[in-house]
Length: 294
Image (cartoon, rainbow, N blue to C red; front, top):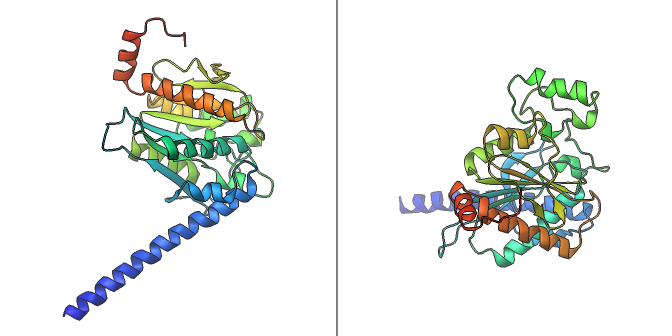
């Protein structure tokens, strides 16, 4: 009987180890692909941040990777932040800058916020021979989020206002794509107080949701682009009242300078500290009545 227990324990350990090894292999393979594609992130840079493969998969079965910076024992976080890059596969800088910020968090994570970071939501779009905005099903993930009356909102907008431009195709139905479905499920599970999505190349700050928008992040200033049917900003910011800060970097293929990267990060952390929850917003504005307009 004792020998049977040992056998069962060894079997469970082996199965668990194999599963862990499989997950590690997924991350190693994906980091190899990411590091071979991006000029500002090499393979070791990707491996060093210790990403984890989620249960999310792309159309072509690439894992959606994530890194958690959890609460620390010595302080309670002000709130939860979900940081996302690479929603559009041809916006290289939106992925690379998130890796730079993960390095900053690896060194300086103080527990001020509880972070979930997904540097690349659209691996199929980025990691093909010629990167593309859309995913492997030719759907714009940032137009595939839920909307009421889909045919007369998201599809109608695509047909009427874009002239059926394939770069903006919202899909045949909301959440038709595994990548957008995974993100909505993750939002439901993590319940972030703020979502930060990185894009390019408009060189501005966009915003959807309650409370004041960031007036500026580094040298990027607030310039509202509008809320499009099926976009993450519409879904999370307008419909679900989760503030969505969209950072539009100036160039899709050229990284900001190190100073600009740090300046955006510094201003974002400051804004999050003052706005991440309703309580933080009220406290900040009761103390500082001369805050810059936003």
